Length: 411
Picture 1 (cartoon, rainbow, N blue to C red):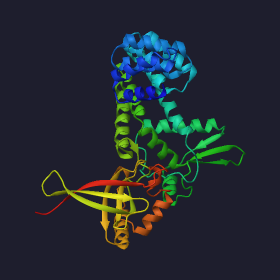
Picture 2 (cartoon, helix red, strand yellow):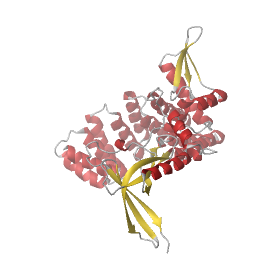
Picture 3 (cartoon, rainbow, N blue to C red):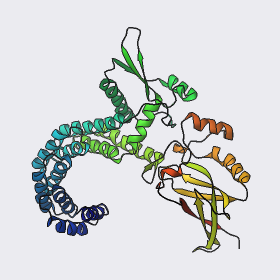
Picture 4 (cartoon, rainbow, N blue to C red):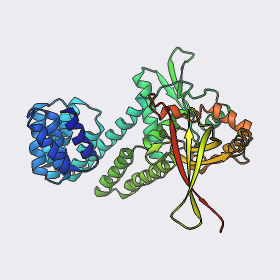
């Protein structure tokens, strides 16, 4: 059964809803009281625009398990798609009774209220969704000195800034702090230059009159914004608020939220690559390694396909010293490889290229730092070097990867 369900889930995630549905119908013959099977069937029907059947299947799912918020959420969406907005709202509220911070249900509730023309309630719930989304990220922030220090300058949007300030107030209240504060421009610049608190997000103090105070540091605001900017739901909710405001006739306020959504979109493009958030402020990382190089004719004239196999352990005797360039994202996607005859030549390449690494937001050092100062800068920001072990299975006895590039050749 588990294998059958896994296959159905995989097909569903790939958008093959009819194929997934066929497997789920077979699975139902073995257990007609499996709430999750009915849930997946309902979701398949929903995406196939068969809303009546989606409602029927999800009704069975909720009847079998009325304590799972995601089932109630899907049930509400099915009603919404079928045009029964009041029943949709009822299911979203049931989901929120179980999990008051369930962002999807808050957002869906607000959307349904907007569809009913209840713009004031809709906008209120959209803002609750944003507050909870940002707070969820803030709750998970581990305040220690080893955190990466982001470097992209002032947050230049009032709405986004207000969302993050609100999260700071929430954290201070959560931990029973009497007061909280954050740096002004001068102290933020000083922190950036000195890294006095390393990667900390905040520091807690006791005032002269014995009260507790939490002082939020620049890295809190920068790091939290990176997280929410790379979450598409945050941008979507900003856009939804803008539409609700526009529908209610408040075009001036609506444009502020549309502007915030555009700002977030532009920043996400800087903070991430193909859906993955950069590990830190560098777009690329370099790695000294051994590899073998093979060249083949490419499909275009005067071009060779260069296949470099990088060996992370036990390189063959005929391997060469290489400098591999990877996208600085969790999956470390290979970008290019340069091969050298000696280790000294490869190291010289790293010393020349590493300080010129493009940073997020198009930033760069002007003038370019020396290699030694660049290494100091990376260490001060808690930046980590390429870690091949984070992307390979520990059981892999021969960790290697092949990076393919194209090279033009003369006539």
